Length: 99
Image 1: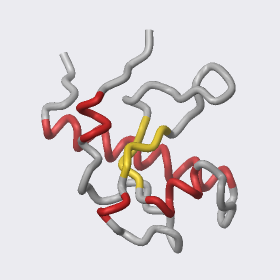
Image 2: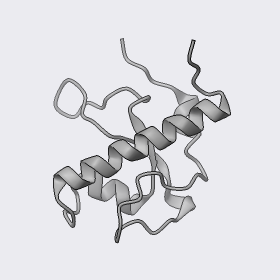
Image 3: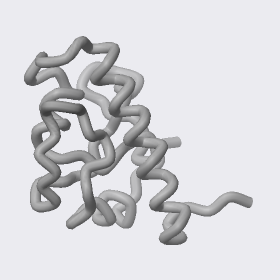
Image 4: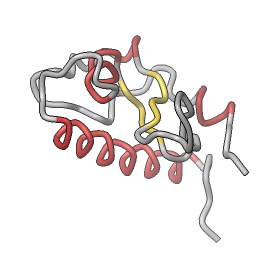
């Protein structure tokens, strides 16, 4: 079962980047999308939408390794920290709930 949510994906619009790779992030809200922070179960597949972060274009390029300015392990760490911050925002907005 995959978690695909139009609401979560659309919630990224206009948000601040939560990945915030130092020296790369331009803090431009107009380029923020929901970026998946891990790979899915096959080539070219994405993980569930819950495993994603609000991410600006520059940070997205870095965590997807299009650019390779930082070590992969550091980019991954920034992505996972951004996912945690994004999930906190979703909890505050009521887009995800804990029961």
